Length: 637
Image (cartoon, rainbow, N blue to C red; front, side, top):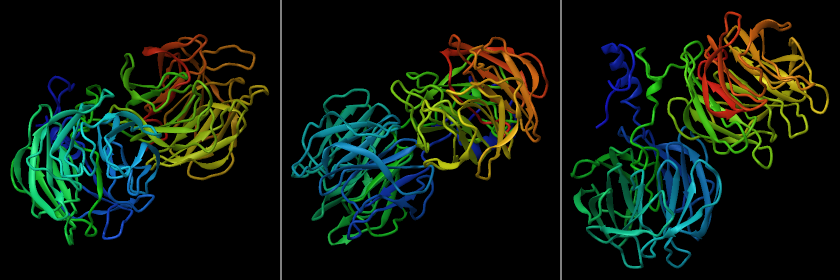
């Protein structure tokens, strides 16, 4: 059972009873419970369809439209992690893979290819890896292949099932470490249960047997400890049996109860508490029924609601199944006795992130801006890059572009501030480049300038709450722009390096909600580039940098964002550096890393005053060119 927060061993300060109650009602248990959505996709109703529909496992009710697959399909596989749902395979045998994000409604996009084209595959996942197993090519297959879910690309061989078979149980059945594969056609209906360990690449091992052999696709779901199998058989000999196994052990399945209707060719979703069986058929009838059970009990299923149509041979994915950690891995460091576990927005948000830092480092580090101390590991970017741009809303951090070991990239990644974890793909920049600057308000983010290594005057924007490719905004002063900051209405950029021309002292600005070319704001104290920006809603500060002649600087300049004019001296950093990363919580500005040589230094200033910077702590390692983002900067309301 979940622990409500605060936890005595992890929370700080004095909590009020009404604050605890508020957190439980608004934010869930400690940490926040996952599993908000289950998706049913495709199927035959009676002809094949491309519909994706969603349910909320914690409630009861009918499914609703989520979006569409890229093709009409039935008899294929699916799985999900916290962020993405991936669907693949299908009949006639295909290797096509597509995905959607649980966080936003919309149609599926291309993911990559299976290692072997086949239909009737079975999906499983933890938060890192997704596996597809079995199927038909058209002969029966024992193939297991896998992919890293946060990336896009083709599957890789993992190993083999103990027996070649197709149309196994449909729905994630795993713990965070172990995946189970049950039943199927070989060609007779099978009672075999196999398992693999996610951390390996190896052949499956015998686990035990179902209470009755069944195939043709049947529903399954799981908590982190127990897997349940619902219905099954073939269209002429179906069953309403529900049985279960304990995932961490080995052994045969045990009777759990019965479905409300005998059926096969259904699919399962769940949220680690509830297991659900949707759709299916019992010739000649197809069903729109959704049943559910509480996984920890042993009892008959109860009506949940209905699918949009009577559908069989559908697949499924969810973002709260047992293969995922039962709760979001929130950082105890971020909890406070102020009512909400994680404050967010202008003036109150307090999380700062630094992503990447050279072409082989993909680490994302975080700090609590209002405190002092060393950075802590948050998760990983999808790729290690140097000189990426960062921007953020109060909820989401977005990192764009950069340079990997071989080239500049157009990749845009994102993470949610509320939980530690790895980044997921957001979309692509309009132009691949590094040394670009990001600035944003709570809705829109704009990336400006960059290098390919030829200087670019590109500006493109994203809507932070959605996912997708960036859109052209207008043109900026040409060159690398590593200093971007904002108020709620205006973004200001400085530190232009129009390589191979001379470095300039320009400060320019845009109105974030519009589109168009950049406008002159004023001038820096001197011409320099590779600056670290910080801002409250009123004042912007640019730290460090490098002159065209190669001098590395420790100076801090400041401006009043709502006006235009030249920058004024603010003070000095604790050490001279360029390609450092700056962020803020509207009160305090922080400058981290930098080079000449690479440094792990973190400094801070109070933005509303002037004066020299003070030591804050250290990064995990010496780095420069990190993508910065915070959930409380001056552009947030």
